[in-house]
Amino acid sequence: MSEEINRLAFEAELWEQGLTAVAGVDEVGRGCLFGDVVAAAVILPVGLVLEEVNDSKQLSEKKRDRLYDQIVAEAVAWCVARIDAKVIDEINIRQASRLAMKQAILGLGVQPEHLLVDAESVELSIPQTAIIKGDALSQSIAAASILAKVTRDRLCTDVWDQLYPGYGIAGHKGYATKTHREAIASLGPTPLHRRSFLGNILAEQQLLF
Image 1 (cartoon, rainbow, N blue to C red):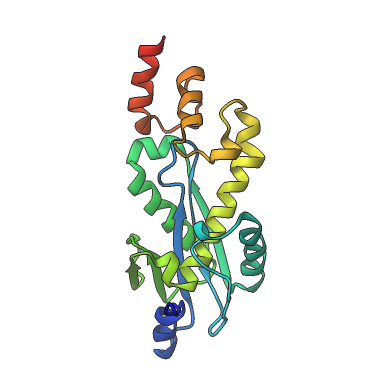
Image 2 (cartoon, rainbow, N blue to C red; image 1 turned 180 degrees about the vertical axis):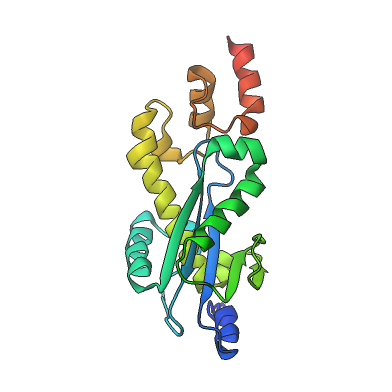
């Protein structure tokens, strides 16, 4: 029998120190060729257990949508922030991811006493713990990953796919699938494509035409 992960181990340690405003922070869309990188920060009530919360990539879309509603309803505070492709190209994806995280934290409306961040550091003078695979190990980070992923997926299906038909954004969500790469090669990049990610694909396009 596999050992059950205690996704409240990091939070419990901080709660025991008397800290109540512990924020989980995560981002999605870092590896995409298209669209914004989206980050979320969420402070959950002390002692709240969300049984089904896990790394958003491990959950079905239906379950993520249901958990999104539950997290938003239960959270002490939450915020989602986006950095677009133009800025990603200007400052690079790592800095853009960190900036999105920083904006999400600053938008909480409640000052966090400690940040639990998925494998990253945020430029704020708030005590923080970077946790490798944090979205699978911390309930707060997992909750942030769900808010960020659902937000980004909805942008892909409800907004960006309509803006730029023919690229299949609703299906691949901007990741570098074969379908997506072929669409870029034949149609050219949109204003929402990250130029700094497209070197090889645009080189292929030059060869094709």
